[in-house]
Length: 223
Image (tube, rainbow, N blue to C red; front, side):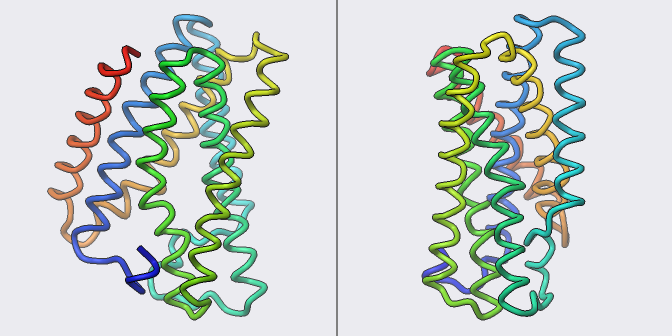
């Protein structure tokens, strides 16, 4: 998208965000349900709280692009690089770990979570790339940073899966942790933007459509 548009605005961007949030929400519920089945009440509660707390701490500690899409200058190249690196770490590393955890639990859940996150990565890639292009980094470099964010997610997924293959007992709590992290992304990073500027109805309908699409996908994959 960034190769053709300097900004992604209007109703389309909120709709993309809300649709992605709906898909991720259903995916997070599936992961929490699986964690509860295999680990019990305390495991899912502790993992969920830890996931939310970890993302909250990361958002406060890491500089990242979110909110800079709102016509604020990102400053010098060093600041731009820090914002990009922070955005990649904040979003894509936890999502890669979620994919690893889902595959460590079962192949159907793994493919379901992977597909859900892939759908969410479309607007997220735009969220990483569009501000950089709008603030003068250049469309090709902005595109490359978007690709880099995907590579970071893949690396986290592979590393996480290898780790969990040696410590399979951590899969239930890791499922709950990933569910909590995804819930934080939904309610703090995605939905606030999707519901701004009179887009409440568009956001609500798109969220419902995303959840329905995820339900259909889960049924298809027999999750």
